[in-house]
Length: 412
Ligand SMILES: *Cc1c(COP(=O)(O)O)cnc(C)c1O
Image (tube, rainbow, N blue to C red; front, top):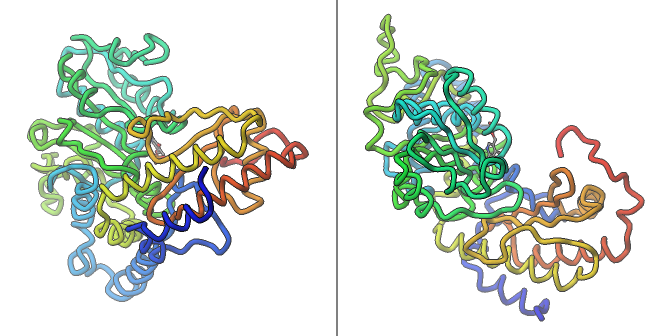
């Protein structure tokens, strides 16, 4: 059995422990929701403040050139690129994940003329599926096949009619992690294009897009990457596809010469063709600050700690809360899960509300799933111990039973 002394030993030996001071974590809070909205780093706060006061207020329009605003999307893209296994020039920060899903899937479909099927997961984060409906509205001949509806396994839906496969690297509910290299190889064997959604893996684990031979990818920067609420998303395209890549949101920022103000559209030769229009620069600056922390992170160490934190939480909760009706839905096998742990419980919403009232913040997804995200840069082993202990107390005392059982808030 793990003891408090073991936990202290783990924290003493943690090579990433020093990163906690880079973040502002409210006193007394154990924040296990970095998979939904990452914590604020001091560097991100300072970068926004500086950009607002000095660049915007102080230098106004000159900052587009002098402060490098115009090139920020590609420069930030390359820094995220290091974390996801992309080469320089393959990633750009732009728009939202939803919009990038649309652009990336449209680009994939255009790369495979005559193939009229898109494959995705019924368990996908819903916005991905909603955006596929938008793609289909432009191409009436397209059909969508869903893993979990049309076949139990995505692999069984692949054939020569498939143009694109949109797949989540880590499942937002269960935390299950796909084998990117193996699945990409299967998708390619069917002649299709692999579009990976990295929302729950970028900044959570080592991602190796080029090692896996991935074609396109999207992801958001406000979860594990800590870019701030609504921070701009990113989109990746492998160099081999760039010259042929076409996406329909052909705004001026995707133009080869935005300031030539030409009559017709001509795409930028590189990844900038995946942009659309003017970006939210203050949000880009927050991400810029957040990435200055990531620039220092060894992703191998990050993954090692993530696996240790999630494994410890599973063990402690199963030891301490046995008999309380919790059901683990996250894979027990370390290499099959991302950086979150989810449990089903009949009173999931009320239990989570009680936990939050006691300073342990996770979140809840209908109908009865409790999610706990583990961001290795600002969580300690002691946090995991305390969170598991608080969950045990909540369940032992049964205090959650007096709370409303239904999710009432607009955002859960
Ligand atoms: C969080 C998340 C999104 C969010 O999309 P937005 O456009 O930023 O709202 C999309 N896909 C997945 C898999 C997510 O986890």
